[in-house]
Length: 453
Ligand SMILES: [Cu+2]
Image 1 (spheres, rainbow, N blue to C red):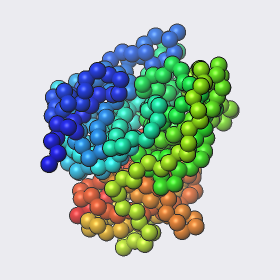
Image 2 (image 1 turned 180 degrees about the vertical axis):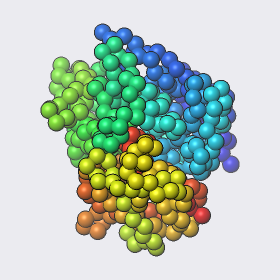
Image 3 (image 1 turned 45 degrees about the vertical axis):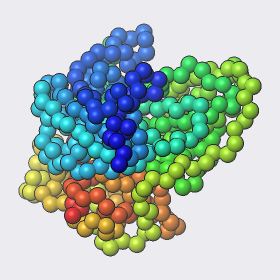
Image 4 (image 1 turned 120 degrees about the vertical axis):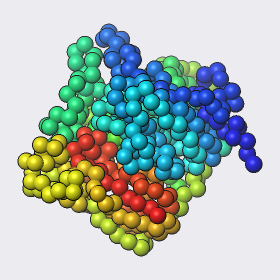
C-alpha cells in the first residue's frame, strides 16, 4: 500500500515546503475578499474575491494517483463551494450546490478529499453564483503531475482572465445584465495572463511546457506564439495520442491546453505569448531571450496516456441536447421549475436560454446511464452564439466529420448553428452537472445533469 503522506498536496514548484510536510494535511483553501494588483502597475489595486489571498488562487499540485485533501473555509459574505474542474472524482466531492453537496454558508467549511486519477492541467473554481464569483477571482490552477514528467526546462502555468474594470481598476458590478446574458456573455475590457511561476528570461533552445487555462467567464481566447516552436500535447488535461505541430489554439471558457515548445527566438529577441484578436495580435507575455550555447532539442513526444477509456463511436443510447434562446433566438416558451412559461415570464425569472426546452436546472436528468455504458449526445446549437458545454466528472470524445473520434475533452465549444456529437463511457456514478461554461449563459438557463447509476 502506498502511504497517503507520500501523495499529499504540495505547494507550487519553487516554494519552500516539501510535499511531505504538507500532507495529510491541515491544508486550508480559504475564500475571502482581498485587494491586489491585477491591472498594470500604473493603476490602483483591485478589490477581488480569492482563494488563499491571491488571484489566481494557490497553485495546487498533486501526484497522479495521489489524493487532494483540503478544508474549504468560506470567509466570503455569501455562500460558495469549490468545483474541481476536469477531475474524474467521486460525485460527493464535485462541489455543485443542490446536486452534490449543500452550499457552504459564510463562516462555514467543507472538507474536500479525492484522488486524482489523471495527470494534466486542471483548475478549481467557485460553483455558486459562479458568473460573479469566478469573475471576481475565485479560481486557481490544479496541476496533476505525471509520475515521469516530460523533460522540459520550465513548467509554466498561464492563467488567462478577462476583467471588466472601471478606470480606477475596480471590477464593474454589473453582473447579470440582460444584454450580456442574452448575447456572448460578460466580456471584459482587460485581458490578462499570469505566468506561474513568473519567468524573467528564457535561453535559446530551452524547452518549455506551457499550461494554458482560460478562466474567463465568457470570453473565447485564441492563443499563439512568436519565438517559440513546438506542439500541442494535451487538451483539457488529457494527453493527445499524437502531438499536433501548431503555433496556436482556441480556448473557450474553462478549456485548457498544454504545449511543449522550444525557444527559437535569437538572443536579445523575445518569446511572445499572444492573444489573436479580430483587430490583430495582443501581447500577453513578452519574455526576453538570452545567451544561446544550448543545442537544439529532439522530437517532442506524446505525454503518457491517462487511465481513461477511448470509445470507438458506437453508443448504447443517444440523447440529443438542443440549445435554444438568447438574443435573436426567437424563444417563445420554456419549462422553468416544472412550469411552462412564455418568453416574458422566462425573462422575468432571468431565463433566456433553454436546453431541450428547459430553462435552469430541470427536474429530471437529461439522461440516465448505467455505469459502464456508452452514451452519445448530439449537441444541437440552434442559437446564434457559441456555447462551451462542460460535463462534470467525465471526459468525452467528439465524433468528427470523418467518423473518427476526437481527443478527450471536458468542455467543447459548439459554434452558432453547429451540431457536434459527443460519445463517452459513463464510468463514474453520480449526478453530473452538464452546462454551458459561458457562465453568463449558465446563469440564464443553460444547465442540466446526467445520472450515472
Ligand atoms: Cu453558452
